[in-house]
Amino acid sequence: MSDTPRALASRANARKSTGPKTAAGKARASRNAHRHGLTLPVLADPALAPEVAALARRLERSVAGAELDAPRHALACQIAETLIDLRRVRLAKMPLVADLHVDHKTTGPLTRKLLRLDRYERRALSRRKAAIREFDAAALAPPHPEERS
Amino acid sequence: MSPSRDLPIHSSSATRALDFLGRAPLIPGDERAGYDTLLAGIAGTVRPADLIEEAWVRDVVDLVWEAVRLRRLKAALMTACADEGMQKVLAGLDARDTLSLSRRWAARELDAVGQVEAVLAAAGLGLDHVMAQTLRVRIGEIERIDRMTALAEARRNAALREIAHHRANFAESLRRAAQAAERIDDDAFEVVASSAAPGPAAADEQPGAGA
Image 1 (cartoon, rainbow over the protein chains, first blue to last red):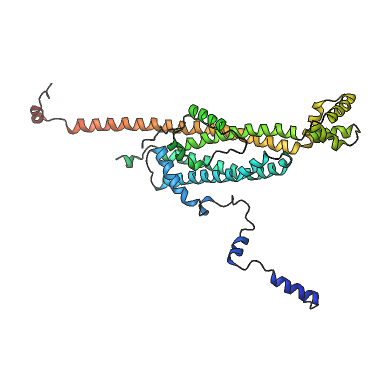
Image 2: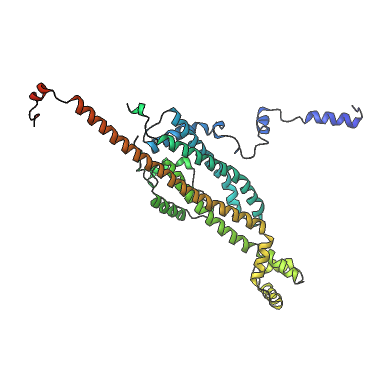
C-alpha cells in the first residue's frame, strides 16, 4: 500500500464518502437502482397486495354469483393479481405517453422507453388470459356429483 | 351458482365498482367526452356481464383510443419534423444555408417559402419528396409508433376474442347446469314415485287413488 501524501489524502477522502449515514439517507440510497418496480410481483408490493384478495372476492361474486371455495378463490386471486399488475404497468406508461405528445423532437427516446415497458404489459396480458381461462374452467364447471348429493 | 349477468354499465356505483381498472388513460389534450362516448358505445354493444368482461371492454376502449392517438402522433411527427426533411432535400440540391432556410420555411416565413418553392420547382421536386426525406430521417420513431399501433390493434382483437371465449364457456356451463337440473328433477320424480307407491291399504285411504 502506498503511503505517499496523495494516497493518504485519497484514503482519508474516501473514508468520508462511504455513502449515506442517516436512516433517511440510507433509505433513499436503497432505492437508487429502482427504475419502475414493474418486475416486483404485485403480491410482494405491500401497497398492492391487500387489494388482491378483496378484488378476487368481487370477481367471484360477479362471475359466479357467490364467493367460491379456496381452490377457486386462489384462481380468482391470480386474475386479480394480473389486473392490478396491468393497471400498474399502464400507470407507469402514462407520463411517457403524455410527454410523447408534447415535444415531437423527443419522440425517439420516449418510444424506445415505451416499447421497453411494453414487455411488462405483454406478460401481464398473457398471464391474465391464462388465469381467466383456468378460472372459467373451474368456476363455471358443473358441481361435482358428491357436492350435489 | 347463479352468475349475476346484469351489472349496470354507467351508473356511479358501476364506476366505483370498476375503480380497480384505474383511471381513464387520458393525457392533456385528449377529449374526455370523446373517450366517454367511445366507452358508452362499446359497452352498449358488448354489454359486459361481469367484472372480467368489464375489464376486457375497458381494454378494447383504451386500445382503440391509443391506436387513434398513435396515428395522430405519427401524422403530427411528420408535420413537426418536415423542416428536417426539407433541409435534406435542400442540401441535396446544393442550396445555401439549408438549416436556417428550412426552419424559416417551416415557420411559414413568406420569403423563405418563396425561396424554397423556387428551388424545388427548378429541380422538379415537390412536397412529396420533402415528406419522403422526413420519413427517412425519422424512420426509427415512425417504425416504433407503427409497432405500438399494431400492438394496440392486436390486443384489442385479442380482448374481443377472449370475451367470446369467456361467453362460450359461460353458455356451455349454463347448458350443463340445465342438463344437471333436468337429471335432478328426473331422479326426484323417480324417488317420489317409488317411495310413495301406495300399497292396497294406502290406496284405499287416498281419495281417487284407484283412478
